Length: 316
Image (cartoon, rainbow, N blue to C red; front, side, top):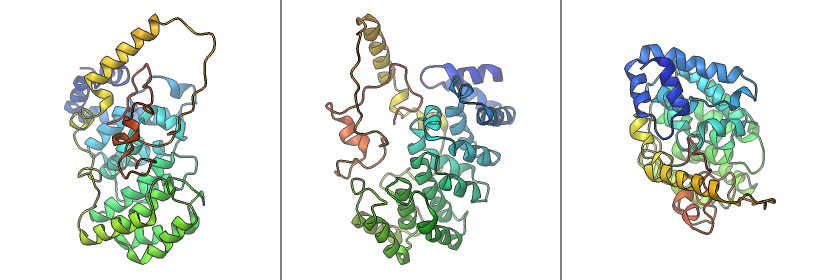
């Protein structure tokens, strides 16, 4: 398969473009520079240019699969763009895999991760995940523990916004993952000041995570076994996502046909999504302790209606 055809299928094909992904893997030395150029061209484009169909969702994951260290800095700049534009490109990857991809391409310098974290206009969930990337890399022995611990300490005063934002969830998560019990009082202050939304978790959850991490100092603890591992085989990983399942594609086709047959209404009712900003893999805001995708997201009364055009990042 020609490289131009690979890029076309990655951008246009419905479902998981397995043939293009495999063809790219067979020509890895040739496609990596092309993939990096695609990232750079996207970053250099204006807003109109960024609305064109793009292969970036798959490029992002494939570069992580390849452990391509030359991709580390371009991908960090990609993750720093405006939240809405990034969501259009990466979808659920912002919450599900961004940290695992960045840990897989890490080149030894934490500063690009710091820059994503400190970018106030970047997606708050990505910023949160980059804190966890730092902790993952410490546990893997790729980053100095004292250096990251000092960064976490300094972040309490420098991180913005100094109010409720999901970025603070990643901050406390990294402290818990590294078993930094000496920062417990500082984390308590963050909870008391409302930096971490009480709907998401309470200080007692931090304490439990901290204790569990201290009992397992040689591995990043998390409830799901692969949540804090390096991103793996692209096809194997993404084929498990709901958005690439045949069931989902069939449902999108059914909805499209139903919409085409439905008479057009002259007026439309504005619907507010009460779960806007809550990722499928985040704790459910109802306080059940379950992931959103395993709790309220699956309740018929609140389940969001999927878009007629299947999103590349629509869930796992």
